[in-house]
Amino acid sequence: MRISSGKSNATRFKSGLVARALAVLLGVLTIAAQVQAEEVLRVPLSSDIGTFDPDNGFEIAAISAVNDVYEGLVKYESDSIRIVGSLAKSWEISNDGMKYTFHLVDGVKFHDGTPMNAAAVVKSFERRRDRGLVLSYFLKNVKEIGAQNDNTVVLTLGSPQSSLLDSLASPWGPKVISPKALDTHDDGDSATKWLTEHAAGTGPFMLSKFKRAERYVLERFEDYWGERPFFSRIELPVIPEISQQILKLQAGEIDVVPKNYPIAQLDRLPPDLEITAKPSMTQFSLFIKPGSPLDDSEVRRAVLTAINPALWVREAFGKYASLSQSPYQNMMFKPKNPIVFPTDFSAAKEAISKHGPVNLTIGLYSAAPSYGRISDLMMAQLALIGVNATSHILPPGAAYAMKGKSDAPDLLLTISSPDAAHPENQATAFFTKDAPGNFYGRDLPEADALVNRAAVLTDVKARNSLYEQSGHMYFNAGYVIPLVDADDVVVHVKGLRDLGLRPVFPPGNIDFATVRR
Image (cartoon, rainbow, N blue to C red; front, side, top):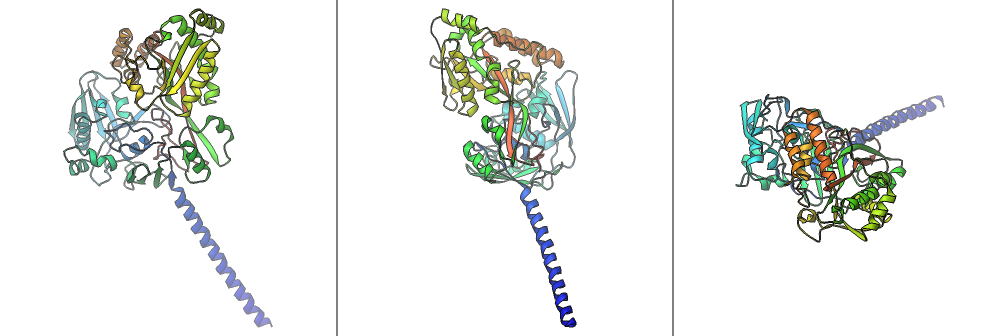
């Protein structure tokens, strides 16, 4: 009995050891599977990618993907408009502001294994400037692009341009492309056809899958010269409908809803979700058509009284927006004298009553929910002073074809955000005579003259003073009404950190190189 019992106990002991070993192994495999799962980040795109060519398209939803595959000489630091080095580790500017000398990082390779050097930068920048590509204007003032040696690039300007570094740091600024790829795939088109759906940059990620209108995939570049990203793969499914994005987030099929999560639902998210919000340069503004009822200064003052954003910003954005202080974004500079909206509702009602029926049409640049919320709230406020206002969503691109059209809306509600964090970029994008975003073709020479004077100044205080003066002129003349600067609000699974939201980037563009769990 004793011997038999001993054998039974030994058997049970061995079985227990095996069971414990299996349990440990299973635990290790489970942890390994979890770690592997955590290395994949799934971020939906609200619109499809038109082109991955960094020189030939103004991508919005996927611009962070382009910037994590390609790199420029400099970039904006996360959560900031501070310019830091990227492929350039340092630089000098000549005393006359005409020559910029960049010293390159050593040991950088393109995704195809080609070394990155000054000649590669020159080739890429000349392609951007000289080949008639969409974004060539970023280098229009650069007259000479030269390699002083393998690690030094010199840009010589046609005239002083204090905004040059901002233009180089822009998410749409010039990037460096493998010269081998440019030569191999140049079919007389500067490789634009190949670069539309392929890529060869130096960034922390490589483009590994391009499936138009369906899905895109980035893979971590293991030979990257900089800090190794946490995620090994970024999956970018195209999911245009915000409702579908929310359902997939709640079902665990994606990790993020990058933008447009309903404001009313942000205070009652499921417990496994959280918010990352940062100030941005997303400024909502109204542009005014010449010949509208607002040409009359009394009517315009009454309308300003009614649509004062202080009356509705909380209802429209909750705590995720701030009042615009000038036609230049709050992050660009803090004006000494912010714009002021009138507040006397009795005077506003009297002015509208005196001028008879006042009818206004508001054109909405986009069907995004924020436009509808703002216009509904403004129309309700206008009704309080006797103004009948209606709104409608404009067809895509229609805002850029309104100059001189009598049937254009009296007011255009749009986001007036520049492509770089310098006031010159804002003014020459939206306010000056030939600005592409000067939607109604307005012309205020005295304000434009201040912008031109400021453009060459290196003294930031003096420069900003001139831009502030020009902003007051555009506002007081009834050209533009800045409303609110909206935050960048991203809803995501709990545990995501360091999203690297950058103010100049369009909302929701996470930096895949910095984000981690």
